[in-house]
Image 1 (cartoon, rainbow, N blue to C red):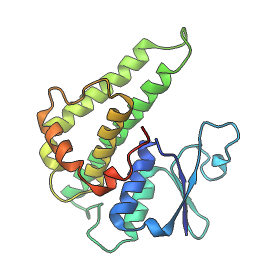
Image 2 (tube, rainbow, N blue to C red):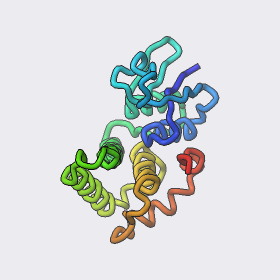
Image 3 (cartoon, rainbow, N blue to C red):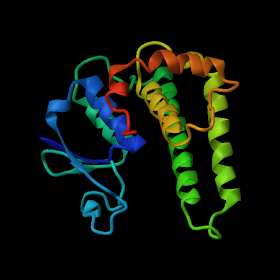
Image 4 (spheres, rainbow, N blue to C red):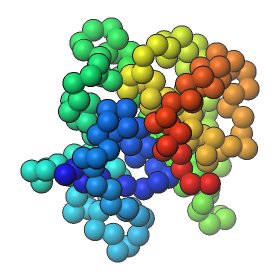
Length: 201
């Protein structure tokens, strides 16, 4: 049995859960709810970085973080891989995963900064993260056609990132001025793996 250190609001965990569903591997996974911010957490025993997700394999080896975990999970299933083989399609998928993870990174940093006490927040830092997300969304808008077709780790990661923006920054309309990306997201959001991994309201 595989063991996943899990948090329902983490976009990186959501990506892992989506791959589990897409690959039909849910029955091989035990989830351990983990609060990485708790002073009492034992998470660093599995991941010294203190982050979720962390995946413990049947031989006791622990994998982290999400790009490594999802590639491992993809290797366990014999169907068409979410990670394309070597060639242009692979680099496109990995590039999409990188930009999507970067959107999540910046959004989380911005949110954490906003939660600091008054007088300690940096408006410049939050604006830097907001602009990083906006530039990344503009890139995805320009390249939205590359997200079409059979799912890859790239397109699944972009779904997660856009879903996270709706979850944490729903008051800001990332769709405005991005019709191609909006259209793709609306259509692709019908995936069972995305619906079943929605964070709690």
